[in-house]
Amino acid sequence: MSDATKKIKAFTLHEMLVVLLITVLVVGMAYSVLRLVQTQMNGISSNYEEMTEVRLLKQRLWIDFNQYDRVWYNAANRELLLCNEISEVEYQFQKELVLKGQDTFHLKTKELLAYFEVGIINEGEIDAIDLYVGGGNGTRLFVFKRNSATSYINR
Image: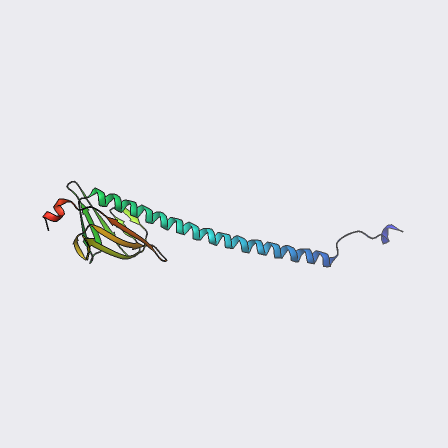
């Protein structure tokens, strides 16, 4: 046989198209899985950030409720005022966030109930709050304090 008629071993066009099609399918599935994983990770990250904000707010409320002797609530303005002989601090509960002085907690406040002794009150001195915050089902924060003697004397 001469060199001109010698057959060169190579892939046919049909074989190359099949390989290309399989490659496209595998790469497409890989991108789909990557997108699902990224969506899941973003959901986990946002839930973690929200729960961190809830824990920080709960911790701050517990510290303030136990540090300050007197706590007042005004339902019309959704404000909580905590004070003692030395200082005072104010919380404002808005729809999308909670403000405490210079601190901001980015949480949706769904419901806030204020209590004194065993009854719900809308205005005046309180000793406990029941607060629902966060998206979805939300998280319930119940914070209370023991009343000082001045709470009963000044009534």
